[in-house]
Every structure is written in C-alpha cells, then in structure tokens.
Length: 298
Image (cartoon, rainbow, N blue to C red; front, side, top):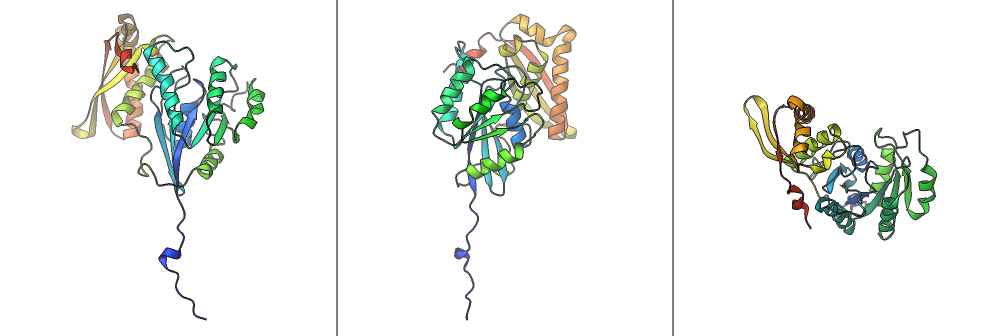
C-alpha cells in the first residue's frame, strides 16, 4: 500500500475566533473592574462613584484561539438632563448595536431600582448570546442574590464572580471564546486597549480626581493631556489640564496650599511610572471652563 503525503491544503488549520463582547449594567456594578480582570491589565479607570466611564473603552484579550474585544459602557442614566449624561446614555445604546455577545453585570449588594429595570428591558431586546455576570461575590452582604439567580432563565449563561479579587474569571473567559464567531483578529496581539496614550493618561488623572474629591465635584471635571514627549535621561514629560465648571470647584481641586492637586499628581505619577517603566514629569494645571460639558452635545 502506498500512502501519499498529505498536502498542505488537506491539513485543516485551527480556526481562530474574534468578536466584540459588550459589558453592560447600571452604574457602579463593577463593569470597569470586570473588564480589567478579563484583560488582565488596567485599561479602564475605576471609582466607587457613578458615571466614571464616559467613553466606550475597548479592552483586548488575545489568546491562541482568537481575540475578544471587550467594550466597557457607561451605566444607563435614567432621566438624564445635562449634555454629558445624555451622551453617556446614547453611547450605551450605540454600543449595543454591533455586538457578538452581551454580558450583563449585576450587583447583588444593591437594591433593584428603575435604572436596573430599564437596563433589563433593553437587554431583553438584544438577539445575541447573553451572559449574566453576578459580581461582588466576595461581599458578605448580598441581599439581592436570589433575585438575580431567579433571572437566570432570561440569559443563556450565568456566572458568579468577584472582579475585584479575580475569582471565577477564567471559566467566564473560556465560555466567551466558545461563543465567539470565527474571524480574524481586529488588533495586533500585543495591544490591550484601543485608547491612545494621551487619552489613557487623561482617564487615569480623572480616576485620581474621582477617588480624592467629594461627591459633587467629580462630575464637573474634564481632563485633557496637551503634551507627551520624551526628554533627556529617559524622562517622559506630560502636561495636562483639569477643566471644571466653577471657581469654587477649582479651589477644591487645588486644595489648601496646593495640597490637593499635588496629591493627585503624585498618585498619578506613581502609577504611570510603574506602567511605563520610566521617570514621569507631570505638569498638572486646573482651569475653569463653564462650557466644557457642551462638547458632549449630541
């Protein structure tokens, strides 16, 4: 018997998968923390305050079997009135328009309200594979856990995880790859986010502002990075401006004797140096511009 060599065309190459997974849920359920855990690196800023996410941020996970592009979305803002809030809600609806898998994140520690019910109604209309991720399972107090477990029949799969502690994240990733359609990668394997460096730095500064300031101030601020350049001795020079709507907020951000803005700059610089592996010189300014929110008019 003669056995002919197998031609290259006859050898079936493993098919790669690629697609978009949109992460939705009401504000403050841990969507950004979950995306960071899924990607394995910090690509989205996190804060205990709502409206932390303003941009639909792509986190990218690439493995041998393919690539998942996660889209972190703002929470739904029921009754949104200002231009920024309306833009956040609209960007959520846009993100749902082109999706391969929908991942709904629920928080069993918080009472169910109108925002949650509106979000669930929106999710019901999406005719794509749907996964419910019940987050914050590390929290000892989960009075609404049974409520979400009872919703499991409305989803194709349910996972209970702790994004903060990265618990049960791997089985979730495995299921996502299983559900992805076949396709070519959208981004190079080394890339973990679609954000430009200056946008990522601006988001990081905004995170530090959110973590330090009182409830009212964060939603009046916007950060723009105006310069990023390599200088001598492996030093990265970064200039950024924090815009706020009123002089009283500007005074709060700067703090007594400049202490506030100095601490924000120090914590930002420390994290940037750890990520970039080089010395950072951060020039941080604060300006009042009552009209910055109008940039988000849609």
